Image (cartoon, rainbow, N blue to C red):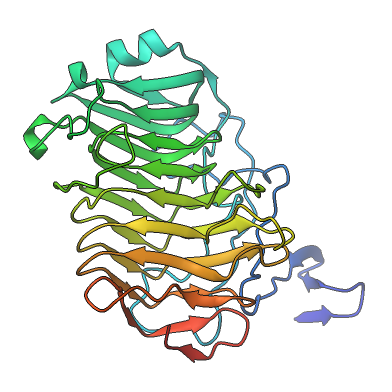
Length: 330
């Protein structure tokens, strides 16, 4: 015989089963994910997959991420908003030097303190980082107005899985760049190390289930969670949260959550959100031919997309306001 006691305290159920008292923790389901993103200490990380090291590894359990809104648009990748709780390393880390990382090409459950700078001399090599922290990632050129690489065969390959990059990604040359479940404290991506004039070439960045967070700044500085210059071709962002810290609109240096220039990019199931008071007039600046934003969520409080001229404005399909769930047409 089994009886249930359901009023012991809020959120707890006790089961009496053959004279054993078993405590079952209840779960709650969130509604729409918040439009803000906490900037606090990260909660503990998830349990290891079955293929990871033995159960003796001191790994704690990460709290579950925000559930998708009930009105989630069809076609999104997972609908689970990337946050500090579900991105970045899941396990304790040991230290790794920059020199040793470049020698082996591997970082696994390790922390690299300082800047990791990929140079043209590393072209053709592959670097893998899993459950790591790197202070800053830089993909660098030797200077000049033209891209350092003109074909994918000349590019360095960089693979990130559950990686923290607290001081951000700064790419001044294209690379084959794949990131999943990773956190970036801001980012700037271009094809060369000067602002203008804009140029174009393949830029096979594929970023998934990750978070870019931009800090608030005042003029004359300008800032956003991600800034992409030049017209790199083929960037892909799937279920990526671009969260910009808010602040006063007066004298704000915030352009938008992203300030993007590119060609044939796809943003699928992404999140363009404010963390605090709305600090800009538009949520996104997306400039260039063939760019598509679909199945994505936009924060309230500003216009959704800066109105670029026809032919340069992105195509927006099946996007919604994160607070109301209503379809929007930027």
